Image (cartoon, rainbow, N blue to C red; front, side):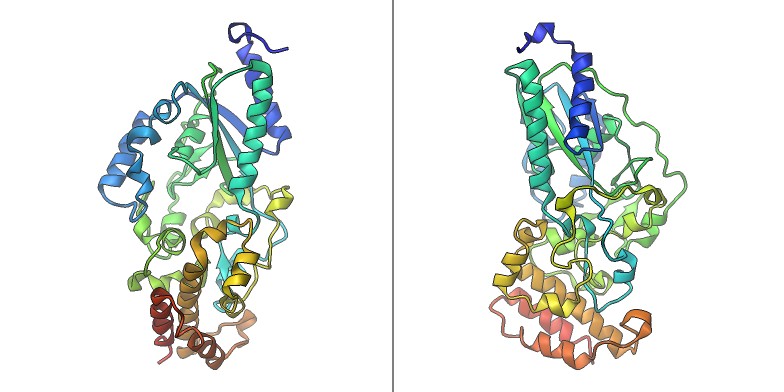
Length: 372
């Protein structure tokens, strides 16, 4: 039987929400209010400096991102969740990055699309809450609306925002997804994570291939490989192409080097299991996918959102960098064994020289010019 809102024990309900969240596969659940004033100032400055690049959606919604009640009227609390995603059965990321004939895909994208998984779990959590409260207002999000999710997660006690601007949890590092439920229920809030444990460490800043982390806690998206290979829809600026290396979808360097990730907990979610050998495929294998193969093999994957042209664009850049290594007689195989010839790479690139997409043709031509 549902209780009237004024008779609900909200302290007890908050405890139940956390228990239900754990049962649904979240590793942590926290609750916060909607005060994001300090983060709003940071966001507005970042936007004013145009560091969001072509991500117009970052400013399209006005102040809704930092004023949750403007996005969903009546919102007074936010339930924040996190779910680990690092698979335990994949190839070592650094080994792949150090082998330029292989393709590096950001580890969050090697399994099923997290949006679908987390949104489904959040919906189930919200339904459990509604069975207790009856009619109440809520909306569930996971990187799918104008939400300052990392600030919300910090305020909910889930971790601190590191110098690379990712959320870090002291018990498990940063390899996790976030999700939120906006609600009008007056739940008790958790203590925010106010302590920054990055200290004097600058490992993430130092390792960034394109120097996108322009200062502690400040990322210029226009330089970020994740932005360049995922968000950017046009030509990748030539000044960044060589630094992209063999990263064809996203970049994990700042997380791979973070000392807190020695505490990483591998995911237990079967849906995050690596699909189609995306942790160990060669550039040539993936470049040879037809559009039909791309659509089939990225079905249910976050990779699908960049579409086939950007997929070829990204791999063409990586193949150009591989050709550059061969031209300079750098080893390109495991254990310094040469496993591929420049002729093979040039052949697959030549086959795409007449591709219908001008963007693909331009990046293919650039790649071919790297072996001179």
